[in-house]
Length: 137
Image 1 (spheres, one colour):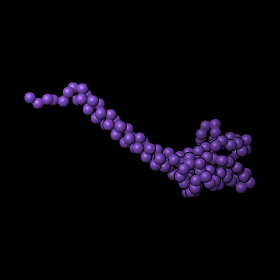
Image 2 (image 1 turned 60 degrees about the horizontal axis):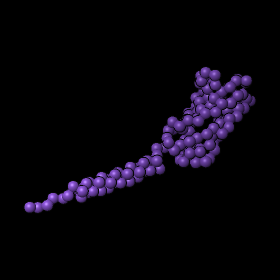
Image 3 (image 1 turned 30 degrees about the horizontal axis):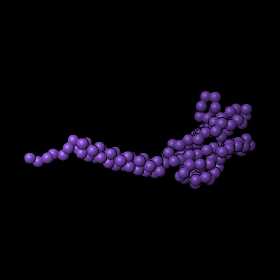
Image 4 (image 1 turned 45 degrees about the vertical axis):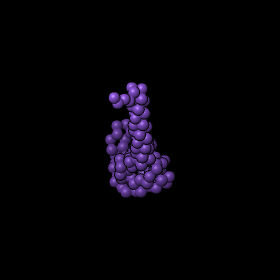
């Protein structure tokens, strides 16, 4: 008569196989999560900030200074100037201004703005990342 594997050894083998499978799954998941976080999509790695806004009422020129504070270069696609009180768009300008990481670029928008009025300027990249700033003329 042949002897079978004892129940204790069979249980230990099953536990060992389960632990090995769990370790393999853990290593795969953490490696996958790290690669997603590191690579990321451009939308997640792009970050911009409106540093300053100045308006020249003589030339009707609004100058917007935008800093790229993200991990990748960005391209500014559009600029919106809106009334702060109701978000009505005063003007929308399309542009194509590239900004390298940590650089600041200025953009001029020709627009006639009323004095003693609060506005919001919103800058949008080609990937849809936005930054806004409120200012009063």
